[in-house]
Length: 429
Image (tube, one colour):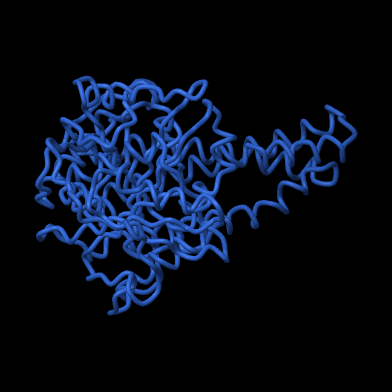
């Protein structure tokens, strides 16, 4: 949208906002798009004929209509180009090869992504270990909620780390045992390179097997309902960095505070009475299978997958794929009127948090392209869901990244050593 607005502004400036000149570009552009779309539909019906599916019924009539349309619009396009070429139509003609080459490049990228995400590298064997790393920077309401969430499936078997940051470290270490009500030790890591780098270094040093999860839990107190304020924190930078880490899962435990008072939570490290895992899916691929395995590793009270149906005719495809992969959790289909996900997502989450002491563990499969600019070619649905639920009480957000790489080599496991004893220091109780 911004790029289009910028290019349109350049054209208006270049043609001195002259409507008589700009209309020529418009006419050429319109009939070019009409011609290409009609020709594309002709090609589509030829492919449908070769497949011979139910969709092929009446293909001759449809092909004839689109062929006549392509011929008519192409004729008009040729006339317009011939008469208006030197008056500005040449700009559109010159841009066409570049635009079409860009379309083909984008198509190749999507085909590559489809191959990478469907390599069959994930299976529904017994879920790997859920290695939990809790980042403890302050002993606040978000940290208390995170501890309760972790204890619901891991008990005392988790790693709590604190990045040394001066005078506050001693107080956090001193109060940790009483605050957390667990036997888990607090590991103090050096923070000379900054909090984000310190946590990343610790995560990389953890030994793990290929099917294990390194679940990095990040408590986050939000002083107001401001997305801009949330983007300025070190927690946001840490979550971005962790998306690239093999086998990492990024779990965000946000708590909204108003005038210093936590909203919707009791701010005590209590195990929730009910933990319901909700997995939002748009299709079935290796990233979804990995997210399902992570959801199973949480051992929740209940677990379900939800697919939001934009096109009722396509619902059967994902149901068939779900059954073909024998995914061991139920799939629910929710209607998304006018392709709006806001209300359906909030309603699904509200169902899970309605009971006293209930917590919703929202799990989001997230495809991570190998290059940052590839993100511009994909929808940002995972980002949208996380933004939408960031300020909802008793909601834990887990992003399960699936890195897209050109090769098929497995992700490297952590080093075979004890990172706590050799690299970091455990706080004394």
